[in-house]
Image (cartoon, rainbow, N blue to C red; front, side, top):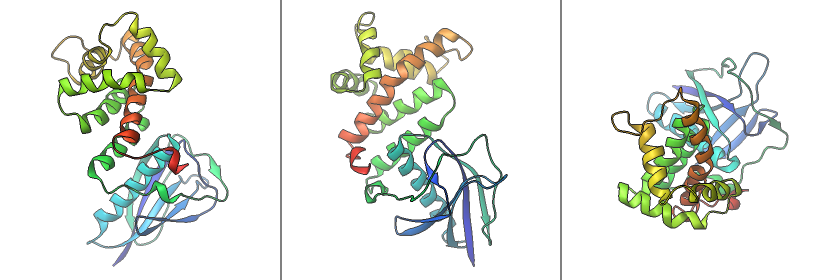
Length: 241
């Protein structure tokens, strides 16, 4: 039986102003703009029940590719499986719309499983509306290639001089004045302090000092994650622009 997999989208990235078909990973996705009380969505026809999982996977990979391309969040909302292309309700906001919507070939999902999970984690981090967990999300991308504490700290310290993002460089300059080992600081006072509550330090989400500190460190964590995706996993952002 032919069915539709429909996923509503809350996003800050551009979306087609008219219903648009987009080829992706050998499939044809259909993107619809918001309409009245209906949210923007992306849908894909599939054969039920054999390819339901593949349909959802394809849509999620598409949103991940868009998130990397635009460097903006792309939050999947309602997931609807139905025989007709029905609509879902709006979330908090809709995407900015664009005419003549096109998707470059370079945005296709990579075959390397490490690159795929890194991009998925990048979209997740961008889309999280919580400062501590967004910071942790960027750190998880480093963990894809560097599994141990020692390796992560060493990689961070070796990579910091290579970063070109102004926000990250300004924060690194500030940290250099107070931290002898920035990699160690980011790992233990950032990553571990968010992920664990049994050891000190612990990030208290009600403590403005913790939230402000992580917000300041966020640009470094994001720049590190983007550097790894581009330079070690080979997903070059500029090539997809």
